Length: 247
Length: 216
Image (cartoon, rainbow over all chains, first blue to last red; front, side, top):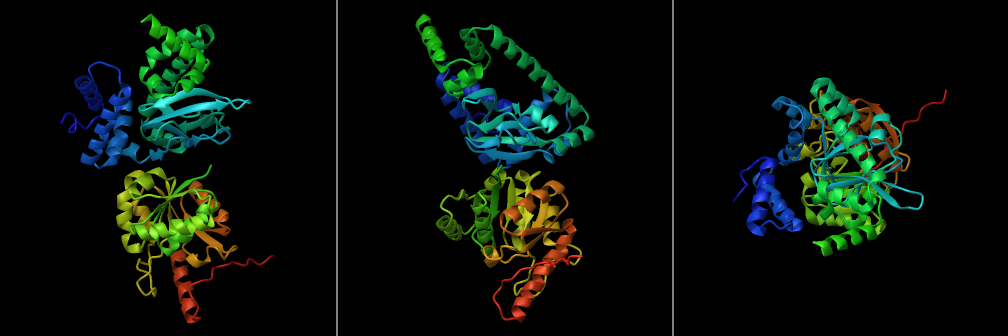
C-alpha cells in the first residue's frame, strides 16, 4: 500500500492528499480524509512500533524548516522533551497556575482561552498538529497564567520546561534562533489578528479564517470559531447561509 | 493541579495500597498489572471505599506511562529492568518513584551490591527521568493505619523531591528527606531490618519508623 514504507510525516501528508483524491475526488470531505490519514498513522504504528520515532518526527520537521540540526542535536532533544498524552477535555494548564511548559502538538488539538466574569469563554489560540502553545507571559515571568489550555481532542504533545529550554540554548545555541523565529512569527500573526479584530466586519473575519485555516474551521465546533473571532455563533450561521445561497 | 499517576503492578499488595492512598488524595490513577484479575480486584476495592475515585484500568504500561506525570513501578525487583526498558521512551523528564526493595525470596538479604540500590539502578535504566526513592519503608497494610508514620524519601532533583514530598503528606504521612538518591542504599536496608524485627517478634509485617527529635 501507499505510504506504509514512508517514514516521514511529510510523505504521509502527500499520501493523504493522493489517497483522498483517489478515494474521494477533490471534494472537501475532511472528516473522511482525516480518517484515512489516521488509519495510515495507525498502520505506521503497527509497522513501526517505536513510538518515539513518530512522536519526534513532526517536531524535527518543524525545527528543520527554520534551522539545520544534526542527528546528535536530535538525540539531545530526545533527552529533554517530555512526552505526554492528554484526553479530550483534559487541562494542560489552568488559569492561576504557573505555565511550566511550552507544548508542541504531535497529534490532536489544543486551545487556549480565558473566562470572563460572566463565565463566558474567549478563545485565544487553537493548536493542532505541528503547532506550539503556552501561556507565554506566565512561562517567561513565572507569574500566574491568565489562560486555560485544554484538549479539544485526544492529544499527544511534547513538553519543554524552562530549565530544559535553557539547557537546550546552552548546548545548541542555534535553538535560540529557532525560538526567536517562532516568537517572531507569532508576533506578526498576533498583530494581524489584532488589526482584523478592530477593523474587519464579522463576515470579513470569518472569511479570513476560512481562507487561512480551512481545516480548523471544519474540525472545531462553530461556537468555538465564533469565540475565537469575537463574534456571535448566530452570525456565523447567517454568513454560511448567505454563502450557500449566493453560490 | 491533580496529577496523573501510573501504578505498574497495581494488583500487588504494595501497588494496591499505594493506589488507594493516592486515589484518596484525588489524583487520577492509572492501574496496570499483567494479572488483569488482580488489577480488577484493586479497582473494585478502591471503588467500594472511594466511590468518587478517579481511577481506571489500562492494559498497556507504555500507554499508561506516556499519559502519566508520575510513574510508580510496583513490581518485583527482578523485573524492574524489563519494565524500565519498556517505558523508557515515554518517561523522559517525568518523576519515577522507586518503591522497590531488592530483597531475596525469603527476605533475609538484599540482592543489590552494597555500593548500589534498586533506585540507583532504575535511574541508570532511565537516565532522563527523575527517580525518587519513597514509600519503601512503609508496609502495605500500614497505609491506612500509620497516619503519622515517617516516610523517608531520597532523590537528586529538587523539584521532583518536593512533588513526592507533597504526595507523601497527602497520604497522611510525614516526609523525611534522607538525602540524594544514593541514600536509597540505606533506606532499602532499613526495610530489611524492619522485616527482620517483625520476624524476631513473631508479628505480621507491620510497623513503621518514627524519628523522635529531642527538643533542645
